[in-house]
Amino acid sequence: MGWLAAPAAARGCFELTRLKIRIIALGHRMPQWVRDVTQEYSQRMPREMPVELIELKPEARSGGRTTEQLLEAEAQRILSILPDHGMMLYALDEHGTLWSTHDLAKTMQNALPQGTDLYFVIGSADGLHPRIKQRAQSLLSLSRMTLPHGMARAILVEQLYRAAMVLKGHPYHRE
Image 1 (tube, rainbow, N blue to C red):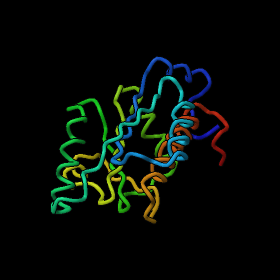
Image 2 (image 1 turned 135 degrees about the vertical axis):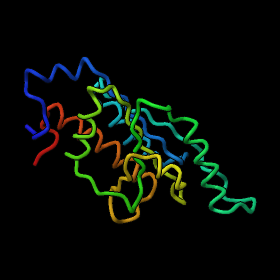
Image 3 (image 1 turned 90 degrees about the horizontal axis):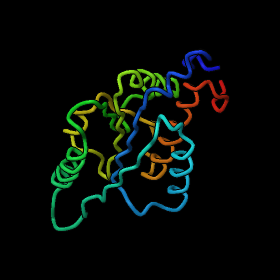
């Protein structure tokens, strides 16, 4: 059993609380393998921790707009989705903090009793506007390497499932 897993008698408490997890991803028309991985791990999630993918089409990289203008337009669309309260936002950024699976599980565990929704945002090819990064509780890096958008999405959803299994005491995650 993982160190964050609830004792057997307490595991039932997760069924009384619901943790909504939303991934806001600037990117569409992902390759089939990305859609398959995202769907597979989203469907595996415990019913009390559903994952919802919100895909936003990136701003068109034409028309003479600067990168700053493009990121600002994307930020406006991201911010329009976020609730004013009752959620925690984590922005994926290559310069963010590297988390372990147990760090992610602890974040999920801490959000459960509060009824706080977790939002993860994956930026476009040019990243995220500073306003999104400032609004986030933390910048999260999946790797020090730059990952393709689809790969980041696939890794994130698998890690969310893995962290959920750590909390459930399921043997999917092995030390």
